[in-house]
Amino acid sequence: MSTALEVAAYTADGTRRRHAVQLPADPFDGRVHRTALHDAVKVFLANQRQGTAKTKVRKFVTGGNQKPWRQKGTGRARQGSIRSPLWPGGGTTFGPVPRDYRLGLPRKVRRLARRSAFNARALEQAVCVVEPLLFEAPQTRRIAALLEGMALTGRRVLILTHGDNRNAVLSARNIPDVAVQRFQDAHPYDLLRADAVVIEEPALGQLAEGAELADEPAPRPKAAPADATPAPKAGRAAARKAAPAKREKAPAKKPAGKAPAKKPAAKAAKAAKAAVADKAKKPTRKKG
Image (cartoon, rainbow, N blue to C red; front, side, top):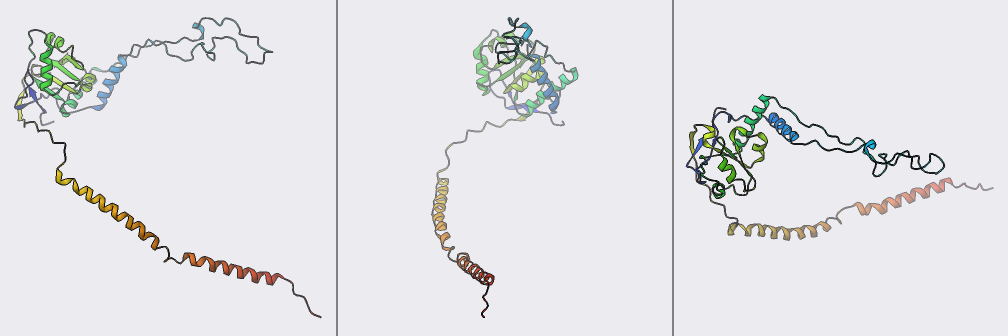
C-alpha cells in the first residue's frame, strides 16, 4: 500500500507519546491473505495434538475365549464371545488408534501468514509500540504499571521483545494472559489470539514519526438529557388514547353491510324452486 500504517507509541512506564510512529513496510505492508492465515492456524492447532488416543478391538479385550451358551435350543440369539462389540465391555469397532496429526506448511506460506497476521492486527489498531524494556532485575510491578498506563489490564497481551529479554519474561510470568516472546518468534496464531500486541521499538528498526495524536476523548455521560425524556412518554400516552377510539369505531361499520340481509332471501328462493319441482313430479289423475 502507498500509505504507511501508523500506531500509537508509549514510553516504558506506559505514558503515551504525543506523536504516532509509522510501521515499516516489512512486514507491515497492509495486505492480509486470509487463506494463508487459515492454513497457518489449522496447521498449528493440528501439530499441538498428541495423537495418543487408543481403544481396544475385540482381540485385545481380556476374556471371551469360550462360547457363552450353546448355538441352538436356548431361544436366545447366537453368540460366540462376550467380548463382541455388541456386548457391554466388549471391543470397540473402528475406534481411534495412535496416529500422527502433524502437518506441514511451505516456507513461503508461513512467511506470508506471519506478514498477514501483523497487518491484520495493525489494521485493527491492536498493535502499539513501546520503548525498550530495560529492567535491571525482574519486577512484575513495572510490567503491571506499563499495562495499566496502556489500558490493557485484564486483557490478553502479547509482548514482542527485541532479542532475548529474560528480565521482561520473568517480570510478566506471574501476570495472567500476558506472554512475552521474541519478535522473530511470533506465530500467526499467537498474534491473532491476543487482544493487543505490544512491540519493542528496536525490534522494528528506525521508525519515522507519524501524525500527532489527539487527546483521549472524555467518557460520555450515561444519563440521557432531561428535556428529551418527556417526549416519548407523551407519544405513548397519545397512542394509548387513540387505540380505544379505533376499537369503538370498528363495530359501527358492520350494520352498513348488506351481506346478512341477503341470506334469508336466498333461502326463500331455494325453497320456492323446490316446491315447484315437487309439484311437477306428482302425477295428475284424469277425470272420467
